[in-house]
Image (cartoon, rainbow, N blue to C red; front, top):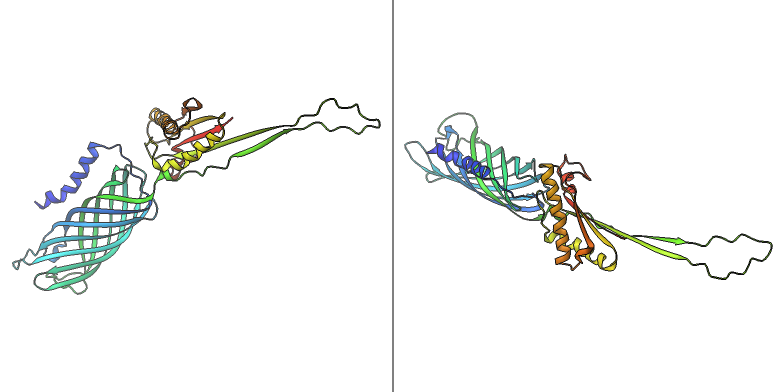
Length: 347
């Protein structure tokens, strides 16, 4: 029975991976996370305490997409496996950092380490508290933009200097293992689509055609029959980039502030044309990315027409796929900048 309980988190994770998902989870800087979880606690054999199911709750904060810090509480109700048959409640309270290897990917492996307090509470002798350290690894699988399925495995090193409750003489360090599965919910933070390139101020160039200078003559020049005309031509352009999440093509409320500026500019220059160029990063087949970039441009066009009343015949769209990157696709930040729609407004 113990073996089947240990395998449950792994089997649950594998089942989700086989089902597959088109979701995208942006591990957002500044976001808080809440992770309820369930799993199994394997206790050092020298403790003479039964292994048992464990229940936990984690609370975290994303310092950046890659780095997070998390505190969690885990509870394991169990009992001794000796003749006394004493009930135990084991509590662990920990704090430590996590490092996400692929924060903008559907499948994101991570490492975790830290320290905490382990409390043994039994019905016979009361409480005993130990300091412990831990290290571990896990994987987060995106079920949506703000929810991950999470599998976590840890090795806990319990420092039992007093050997309280320890019926087997031996080293002060005792080894525990925990495997947990849970759901990580993300609240707040700065999503990728919110990180827009600031719209530049319109560039105004005034072209002035001037009359040629009149050479100094000894004699009076012929009278001018008509006035020279000075013509001023105003050239104004605006370029804005809207950024998208991985494999995303929908316009969201995070785009609205930039689109509002674009719509106002278009209204000020009714004779200007609007060109939307869609782009993608290099993950996935090139043909798929070409279609994805076109859908991004088409959806921005639809938003400008439906939400901001821009005339449809003023807007053209083009998809370039992954062919025109503006940053290095080898980094998460570079890929984020390449998932964009360029909005160009010009005469």
